[in-house]
Image (cartoon, rainbow, N blue to C red; front, side, top):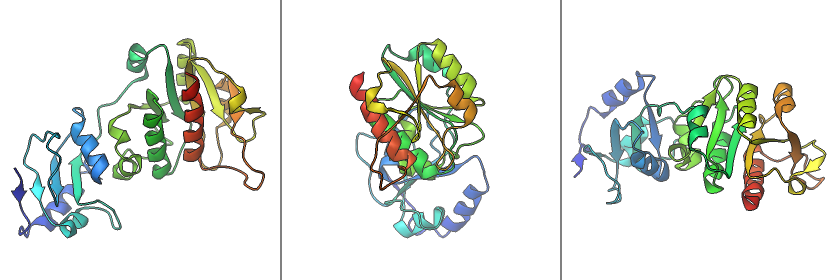
Amino acid sequence: MLCDITKNKSMKKQNQAGNNNRDEFWIYGYHPVIAALKNPNRPKLRLVLSNTIPEDVEVLFKPELVSKSQITQLLPHGTLHQGIALLTRQLPANTLDSLLLNTEKQSIIVAIDSMDDPHNLGAILRSSVAFGADAVMITERNSPELNGTVAKAASGALDIIPVIKVKNISRSLEKLKNANYWCLGLDSSANTELSDFDAGNRVVLILGSEGKGIRRLTKETCDHMVRIPISQRMSSLNVSVSAAIALHKISERL
């Protein structure tokens, strides 16, 4: 049952009140919100929508039926929300130790050395889910906030795949190597092509930042560096595109 507040004049005040709490943020768009609602670990504070939601999605509180323009008032300028938004907080933290206790013999983990663009992070999360990765590891300091922008770009993947924040990516990679993972760094200047390299059935795919690539210390931790061959007419690929291609190649071999 929906709670109709389309005539509620206090919407703007509610919006301002929600924005004052820095721990809270909006997830918006159909697929991100539905995935968040299906995730038992996702805090669900307030659901606003301009239409009904699928019957198989359980909502333990009354959604608020509003107009699309009222939802627009709640969100950052220019947001494409598709008439649905969920007010939430961050998911409980995932740890590398808990991941290692639950991974199968065949496993893919994506590790991002550093990244600025939330859209690229979201796209990588989406590809990671699509190609069967077990988790995405990011750094605490050099990564975007896991907010509505990332959730939208991930199209629901943010609430499907564990995201692990680590303080030191090199130390975390060493821990994964001790758990029989092969650490494969993706670098356009590498000598070996990805398709020519077989890393076994437990692989960490390491990605660098959009501009600088993988940092030196992280490179030194990698077991091997590989590249995706492309036409000489283009110097490089977007990091999220590279991630999708690499994940597809790796998943085919597992």
